[in-house]
Length: 229
Image (cartoon, rainbow, N blue to C red; front, side, top):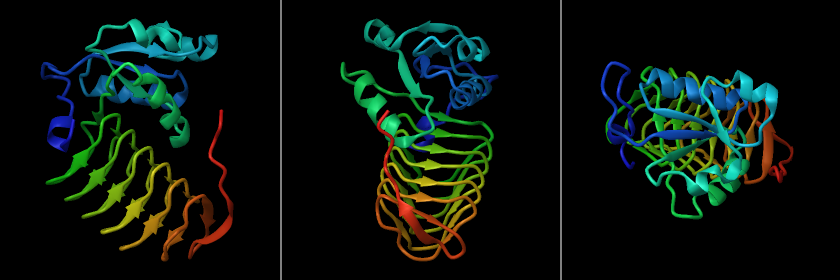
């Protein structure tokens, strides 16, 4: 899927012609993804991953098996990664795609996608998310409820934009970076790879890679060490 128009999933009252999906994970984040797929009328087969009884019983679709289930699944099945941490998503994607399998994408029917926007495989837009125009979204990017990305911005692979954040025009968010809830990245700013912008922060100058910034205006608080689990 390369364009937002192609990536947009048919509304529930329209027949779906795209490949069936599975969600890798069973957490609350994964359950939200399953809900988006259900609202969008997508054919969702179930979840895949370690069988943790409490999580599995709360998931709205069947548990299909452990991580290796995908290896022998029908080639038409595509996967979505139900994990909030972008670095962990990158690691799971390397494993899930090792046999040439492809990820799917989801756009909530309640999201807004403007002209000439692109959406990479595995990326997901939550309800209320807005891409205005000429926005480039990489692979396995998660854009949360009410988050917005303005004209000509670029969001790198495995980045995470949490609910209510704003990335203004001509800005760049690096691979694996996280923009936390309610944060703002002003125009023409670069946020480095694996950087974290804290909740409610306002970024008015470029952010280096592998740091955590907080406050108004945002300042470096500490180094960020990507998850290794």
